[in-house]
Amino acid sequence: MNLKVRNQIMNSVYSKYVLMRVQMKLSYEAYMINFTVSELWLRTIISSFKFLRDSGQILVNKKKSLESEFIYQEVLNNSYNACFKMLLDFN
Image (cartoon, rainbow, N blue to C red; front, side, top):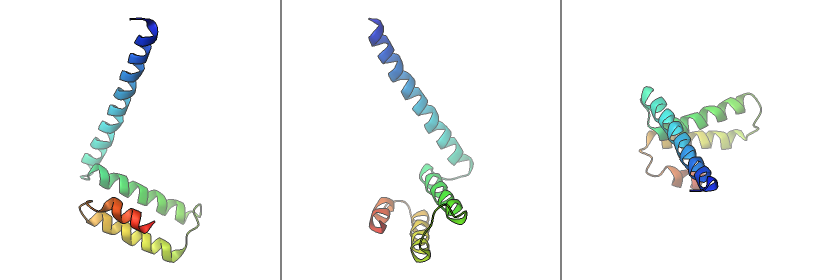
């Protein structure tokens, strides 16, 4: 094998390894707080949004904000079967 092919293979393997490590860290974090990865992901998005909204970095319409919080709470309470459909319908 020439050096270029070796480097391509090494880069490919390393990027897959890094991706696997991130996936394992996310799964472990979700497991430790007894959530699924999807729940952890959505709750993190919601908490980030609330933080940015409350700090004034994101300006939102109060009615739209309450409507979006209701939808996200519905998503978190459901089994995620219609999660992306609900999000797409909202936007």
